[in-house]
Image 1 (cartoon, one colour):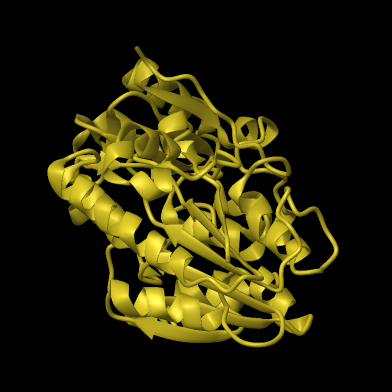
Image 2 (cartoon, helix red, strand yellow):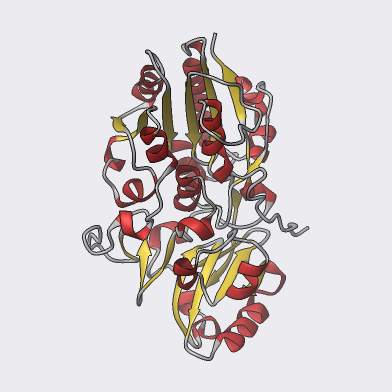
Length: 377
């Protein structure tokens, strides 16, 4: 049975609503989404922790599964890490912050948002495509810092100063980590001490093993157990006037029905660029060819994907309200995969193309993430 579409609930129960709610709990204006007033708050984002996966494998994560879920939240479209981190970090939906795909068009080329290079290339574009200009809005972390809140980001050391970090998580002090121990210690230290404090902590490895082995496999389940212990350790050491909020940036599905754009003549016809990722594609067409490309992609993919024009995707709220400067980053045709489908580009994306574990689309398995709240003391 093919999936039903779940359009993100921007402004109601979306990942982009979370940090504004946390700031409200810290005393700033806004809606707190039911979070109590606190002196300090930590947001722990576990990459790949989907709501449905956590429920299905609750036995492997008894601490997390035993917490009341104040969500679930929808993450936004595409349901992929750079977009979700941007939505969390800025407190805005994708159409506003403009980080609209794993890769998307700027000018006449595709920007790889994880590496901050041209897609398939190795040239560092941070000087040419300045991250603070690609995503120019103030982040929620910068707004917190301006309000006098002590802000700390605790994440992998190699992510400090990256294009993506500068674009969407700038603000406050960056504390680089190497393993679970210093991630836990970094979060605990960041919220301990006088005054208002906000910490954002990030764990990447559950997503990595989901991509490599598949969600629900034994390696993935063993990593989920490690994540569960990580969250439990942080919770054990929370100061009494602190809240820990645990969420994810997307879920994940197994995908083995493959459409290869690089070898499919019909999918290449009148197409200039293909961005996004295997579950969420931006297709940029030659002038005047949108209707033909739309019809062709619909015919080839059939019921295995939702294939719409960029205008239709915007009108139907897939990206939330779209700022005028960001509109050109959205494909002329936008594709969201269904079932176990992936639309690959092995030439430009050799690593992610062969992976079984994928995410990015509008299914509930990919869109929904938990909203777990732990009170210190």
